[in-house]
Length: 498
Image (cartoon, rainbow, N blue to C red):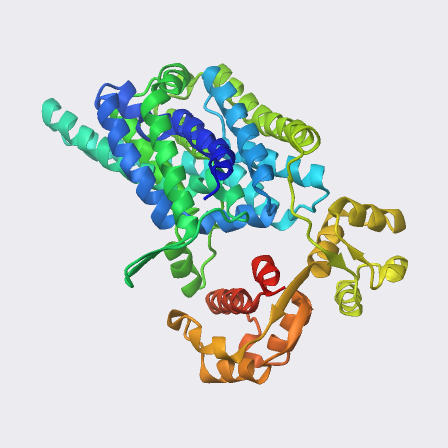
C-alpha cells in the first residue's frame, strides 16, 4: 500500500486517540474517580472491549454516517478527521467532555458545503433526534435504576466490605460492556469518513476467514481509541467525576449501567430486528454521543438522590462545549480543505458525474418537484458538484431536500447485469429462484442511472414491493443493496476494462 495512505489515515488515528482520551470518563471514569478500580486496570479492560466492539459491531452506525456525506477522496477524509481531532483535543485540554459525534457531523457538513455536495437531511434528522433522546433516556434509566437500588440492595444491610466487593465487580462488568458499546457506536465517528474511500484490500486467511477492508479500518480505529484511553484518559475524569456531581461507587455503577443501556438501544442490530419482528418501534442505528448519554445518566441519578447537589454551572459549561465542537470542526474542515486543495493540490473529492435524463425528470415529477426550469439541462453531463448545484439554483429556488433528491437521481452510477454472477448471491439472504431467474432474464443489460436499474429489476414485481411490515421491508432493502453491489460497475472496473 502507498505510504501516502498511511499519512492520510493518520488523521483518523489521531481522531481515534482523541476520542479515547475524551471518552474514557464515560465508561470507567466513575470507577476510577471513586477509587474502586485502578486507572491502569480500567484502561486495559476498556481498550480490549473497545477494539472488540469496533470490529464486531461497528457496521450498523457507520451506514448512517456515510449516508450523511459520502467523502470519496482520501485527502477529503484526512481533512475532516484532522479537523474533528483538533476540535476534540482542544476541548479535552479544556477538560470538557465534548461530543465527538457532534464534531464529526460538523466536519462532514463542512465538507459537503465546501464541495457543493448535498446533505441528506433524513440521516441528519435521525442523528439530531438521537442527540436529544439519548441524554433524556439515559436520565430516565439512571433515575429509575437508582431508585430501584435504593429500595432493594441498599436496604439488604450487606456487610460493607462485601458490598464494596460486589460494587467493584459491577463497575468492571458494566465498564467492559459500555466499552464494547463505545467501540461499536463510535468507530463510525473515527473511521466512517474513510469507508467511502477504500484503502485496504480484503484479507483472506486460507479459505476460511475473510477480513474485509472495512474491518481492517475498524481494527486500526479501535486500537487508536484504546491508546487514547490509556495515555490521556484520566484528565477529563476530573471534570465530570469531581466537579459536576460527587460520584460514589454505587452511583458510578448506576450511571455506567444506564449509559450502556442507551448505547445498546442505539447500536444493536439484533435488538432492532427483534423490535421490528414484534411490530414495535425501533431505535435508529446512529453514532451516538456517549458523552451526552453519560451526562444524562449523571443528571438522572443526581435528581433521584439530591437535585441540589448537581452543579448546573458546570453542566452549562459542558453544554456550551457540545455546541462549540461541531461549529469548530466544520470551520476547521472548510479552511483545511481550501489549503489542501489549493496549496497542496490534493483531490478532496473524486469527480462524480451527474446527468438529467427523462427518467430523472419523471422521478422528480412523481415527487412533485419543479422540473420545467431544468428541462434545458437534459443530456448535459456535469463533473463538478458545485457547477451542477449552481446551474440548478440559477434556474429555480430549490430547497435542500429537493436538491438532495435531484443529486440522488441524476447521479451516474453504472450497472451491468451478468447472469453468471447470479449464483454467487450470498445464501444467507435467501434469494428465491423466482428472484434469481428475473435477474438472469436481464443478462447483458446496462444502465447509467440507479433509478433505471431499479426500474428494470424491481418494478411491477410483488416480491420487491415494500409493505407495512418493517422487518420484511428491511430484509428486502438489504437484498436490493446486495444486488446493486453485485452488478455495479465500479470506477476501478471501468478503468481496467479500457
